[in-house]
Amino acid sequence: MAIKPKPRERSPVRRPAQVKENRGSAAARGYDHRWRKARLQWLAINPACNACGWIDKSREMVVDHIVPHRGDVMLFWDCRNWQTLCRKCHTAKTARGE
Image (tube, rainbow, N blue to C red):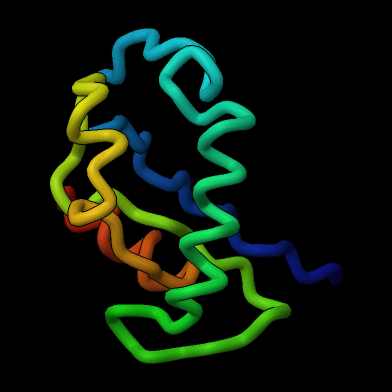
């Protein structure tokens, strides 16, 4: 007699907490060549993650906007609103909705 596998439970349907509007491409939101250049300069001066202190060239570091700019160009380019985060800390911050 063959043993039948247990039926798989269906995972609950995941729905996003908020429906994101069409935000456009990254370049359309300001993350273009100019941003990439500023990001590299920032990371050269501030290589450590602000949250955990991690410094590792093999881990992708993120220049995070402390206060979300939401399209405000002045806030986007205000380097007093920037911080260095490792990918793990940035993902956790984003998940918390900060």
